[in-house]
Amino acid sequence: MNITKRQLLLALSLFCFAASSVYASSNHDQSAFHHYCNGIDLEFEQQVQVAPGRRILVNHSAFPLIEQVGDYHASGTFIEQQMIAAGVQGNCAEYLLSHAKSWQGESKEALARVYFSFNSAELTSASRYLLNQLLARLRTNNTLTVEGHTDDIGSEEYNFALGLRRAESVEAYLKQYAQTPVQLQSVSYGEKRPITTNASETGRAQNRRVEIK
Image (cartoon, rainbow, N blue to C red; front, top):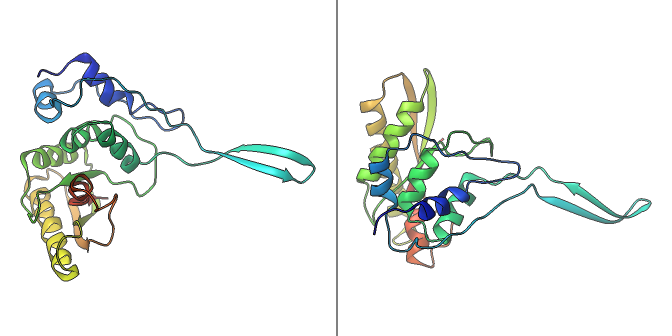
């Protein structure tokens, strides 16, 4: 099934926010988009908007009800989870996030996130593509932390070692292809920092990742 404008709208509409906005680049590589985002489960249209959080104060001081705008902004992780929940495949979500033109979110938001197959530390073609996109955006004298993560299948000790191998795999790739000086530090959190539940295969696939910050 070919990519349609409606499918593109599904993915890009998830980037529309009242306070925190992500704008899709106008010069997407169409063949790359087709490669990462073509799928049979995207034949529908959905729009999600996330506005600033609001806090309601009841019987506060002399006023019975006070409404205040909060400072919460949707994180990249939240955006990605919503895309996947809407039927966007993980590689496609990676691709779209890597092409964000601007992003105002959490100060410790990951610059990039790549995923791994079960029990593997080998980079996929999608991961290499996304790391190349990150390298193209890096400026001089970058200091980055490469965090390795796993699902909860296996022992805690094994997953710590697997997370480190994944981080080191990403670090080696970045060092090999970086065009500007970059300082990298690899760490592993193993199974300790999942971004979603490990109770399903979809959740475990999201947790098998490396984040670059």
